[in-house]
Image (cartoon, rainbow, N blue to C red):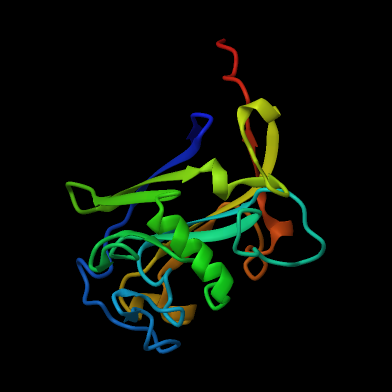
Length: 217
C-alpha cells in the first residue's frame, strides 16, 4: 500500500492453483443463478460481483461507527471488488473492478459505478506466467473515495490519519471443493474480523495514512 498525496495504491500477488473461469468452467452457485448477470452490458444489481477469484477492499474513512453497521456505499465507507474474470468495464471474461456492497442499494450502486466510469478507481488484473495465481493493481482517488470528514477528503496537508480497513480474498475452484461453504467457495481470507461480522465497521483493522515519509533508518 502506498499513496502519492492524490491516490492510494494497492498491489496484491495471489497464489492460486486453480483459476475459476480459466482453468474451470464458469459454473453458477445454487444461491444465485444470476451471479454473472449483466443488463445492457453493465453488471446487474442482482449479480454477485465477488463470485469468482477476487479481492475486496472495505474502507471506513471516518474510522467511526455507532454499533454493528456495515458500509454505507459512499466516500465515508465502502466495499469494492476486483474480480479476476469479470468487470464493469470489460464485461464477463475480462477482470477488473465491480460494484460491491451494498449493491442492492441503488444510490450506493450508482456511486460505485460512477467511480469506475470516471476512473476515480482503476484496477487491472493479470494471470501469473505459470498460471498459478494472479496479480491485482488497484488505484483509488482520495477525492472522492476517502471522505474523512463531511465534504473533506484526506490529503497530506491534513496530517496523519487512521482509517478503518478490511481486505478480503475469495478463492473459487470447483463446486465439489467448496462443499458446505456459501456459494461453494473453496475459502475466504480476511485481514480482520470475525467469520460472521467482518463486514461490520467495528471489525475493521487500521490503515495509517502518513502525511510524510517515514524517516530512513
